[in-house]
Amino acid sequence: MFYKKFGRTENEVSLLGFGCWGIGKSLWIGAEDTESKKALHRAIDEGVNFFDTALVYGDGHSESLVGEVEKESGKTMFIATKVPSMKMEWPAKDESTLQESFPTDYIIKTTEQSLRNLKRDYVDVQQFHVWNDKWANQDEWKEAVYRLKKDGKVRYFGISINDHQPWNGIEAAKTGLIDSFQVIFNIFDQSPTDELLPFCAENNIAVIVRVPFDEGALTGMITPETTFPEGDFRNYYFRKERKAEVEKRVAKIQKEIQLETSTIAEAALRYLVSFNEVTTIIPGMRSEKNLLANINSILKGGLSPELLEQLKSHRWEKNYYK
Picture 1 (cartoon, rainbow, N blue to C red):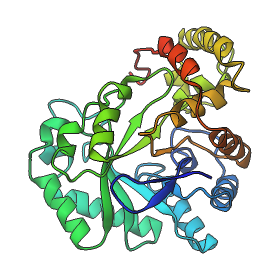
Picture 2 (picture 1 turned 60 degrees about the vertical axis):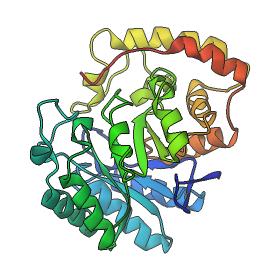
Picture 3 (picture 1 turned 90 degrees about the horizontal axis):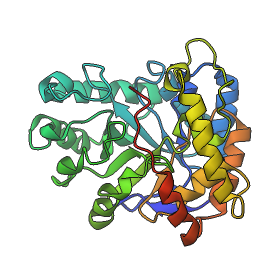
Picture 4 (picture 1 turned 90 degrees about the vertical axis):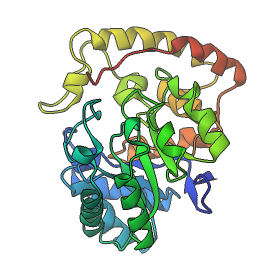
């Protein structure tokens, strides 16, 4: 496994992290705790040490599984979790206030609940699960950060940036209180390269990449005939004509990558490895099979400069979450 410094800290985290939304069973149908725990244990055995969860993933179920596996393994994991907006909204609406979304006492109370789920005294990274930069210079969130760090309950603080808004958090980071950004970044959504990645490089802020496969679009498995279980959020994400559009765009990418990669899923991960600013990549993984495939891709390293230049043409401005 490859490791990188987590921003300006002295901690090293694995370049491949473990995204733990799916194992929480909320909106992803089909996860089984036994299989999820096998995948988590295997990840630890293979050198993965970064695990990203959230309080709302299965109403704490994901956090609880991660905590159980850490105790069972006898190894210390680098765990990131998230405080949901008190309004439970994604993304944070422009009209929402900081007092409605992240009051000081709520941030602290919610963090303490996550610690109970994880069976830990501290969390390595606590993140705002949504954000609006109009709050950047307000004091309530800063007070919570200071208190949680002072009490030893949180080591580092970050922002999980709103879907497809990589700029929305930079003002908060200018306060010096933000250690990491979690952001959507993939072959389709290349927008973090415009402003966020250069800012993070200049300020030594860790970059956690989520949705590297665009919720499955960049695995090559989505066709107009693809179906998902009832209740799975991908029925909404890939609704109507979207599956056909994805299949058409993926086919074009596959023609360009075939000399360097075995699959488009491999290309998707190696594309991200090519950016020095990326600290860790957190695909959702619910099985050992997918875990090992992702490790194999990561270990092959980045793509050639020539292929990276070609892939710029596949930038796609969309928001399937709407």
